[in-house]
Structure formats: C-alpha cells, structure tokens
Length: 175
Image (tube, rainbow, N blue to C red; front, side, top):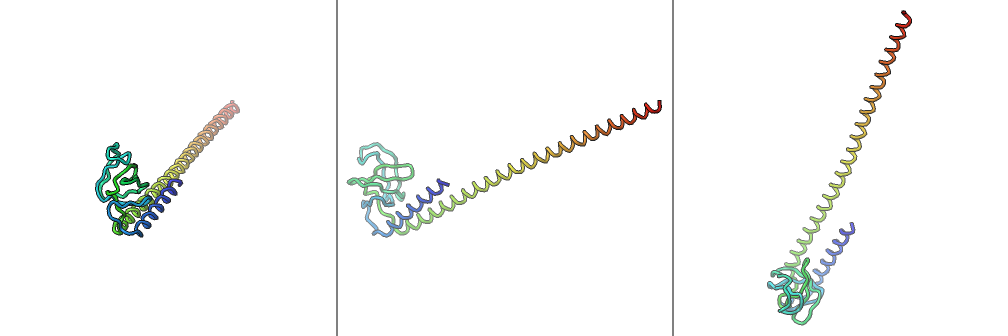
C-alpha cells in the first residue's frame, strides 16, 4: 500500500512538472530550466561529471524525457530511470504540447497497467484465501467421515460382542 502511495505521489509530481513546463514558452535547444521535465533533442552521452572527458555513464537517445536536477555552465545534471549524470545543455529542450499529450497518454497507460496489476494481486490473494478455506472444509469432511466410520465400526463390534454374549448365555442356559 505504501508503494502505491509513493507511485501515486511520483505521478502527481511528474504531472505537475509536465504542466508547469507546458505553460512555459518553448525554448530553443540548449536552454535549460532546473527542476523541469525536458526532452533530449539530440542523442547525447551521459557523463559522471560535467566534463567531456569524464567517465561515460550511458547514452540518451533523442526524444527521451529527462528531469533536469541542476545546471552547471554548459552542462546539466539529469535523471532518467536509473541513469543519473551530466549532458550538454545543447542536447536538451523543453517538452512541447504534442509531447506532453503523448506523455499524458503514456502516464495514463502506466496508471491503468498498475491498476490491473493491483487487481490481479487482489484476485490472487482472494483465490489463495478461498483455497485455504476449501482445504479446511475438505479436512473437516474427511475427519467427519473417518469419525463416522470409526463410530460405526465400534457399534458394529459392540453389536457382535452382544450377539456373541447372548449366544453364549443361551448355551449356558441350555446346558
């Protein structure tokens, strides 16, 4: 449940960033605004430091959405999924309206998939509980059948003993 709240909060923050950036003017490539959702306008290598010679962390393709955490001169520190590092500002641009609509659709798809996943988990949990209940019912029925069989066998054995006693009692009387 806590995870679901965290995801929902992250979605809200992402949508707020999206709508805040959509309200801004469309900036030319190279413009960077800290704390905004931006798009890679060209493929760029992500570096550990704000330096062309720094170690390579990964590569972000043009059209990839990133969040700009800070700007330092000609470089910006960005976050994308598990990747965090520096890219040149010239590779960044703010989201335009069409991209915002696409992102909204994608976020809705993610939210729907998450809802389906949670419903599947609930269904699996209900099935597990029902299965446990049926296991208990079957165990009780088997115990009842065993108990009835044992009582019947005991009664039958007592009945045989009584018959045997009454036969032996009759034999004693006749002698």
